[in-house]
Image (cartoon, rainbow, N blue to C red):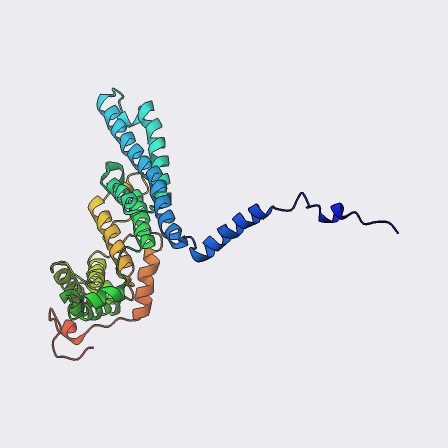
Length: 322
């Protein structure tokens, strides 16, 4: 019978961790159980730091855009070209400016510093005097602010201002009724100017505009509900405020103040979370504007007006509606 080689049985596997290695691993594992890593610190601070790093790129793009426009202005001052905007240097920089602006608009701001940098571009001549870049940049800023969640939710604002109601909100039901009268009386606007129906149409329109002006002239609201009422009043007062585009390359230079009003009103409606009044056609006279007004006329049928307007009065009283 062959004898056992006890040395082979007791020989340690060279791939097996030593007792010292296993003891060290066990100590580390026990330490993790007793004192787990503060993962919540990583989860909260890391995204903030990453957002700040990303915004450095955004801010650099903003600074680059400001520098490009300054260089363009300098070229316009020193060029001897008959049409300064045909200068090769200006044309080249214009392409760079448009590309950089598109990058800024498409890049999300992760911090308020980034949002502020974006907002500073609203004062650039190439932005504030042109509808499309102003509107697109404004929408981008509004989306960034919403993503950051820095504005209070409507329910939070309501709880913080419990008991306070802006006068804008108090007048809103009256404005809604006045605006509804303008939709119902819309077909009367096609009647002869000396007819009772056309005069009634003019009366309800002026009554509605007067209410909108009263709301706009009030002190600034302090609640989101008040902001929404103010935005709706502006939308009524400025409905169809911008003329029809002529497609001659100068449309963005027409009515710059009105275009800024449109962008601001839309932003206010978005932040306040209010929908346009029923039957509201919109600001710009675009391709579908005529269709919008035709829909209003079709909805109204033959047309109607309140009794006070048909009676030649300038505002409602206790008389019943016609």
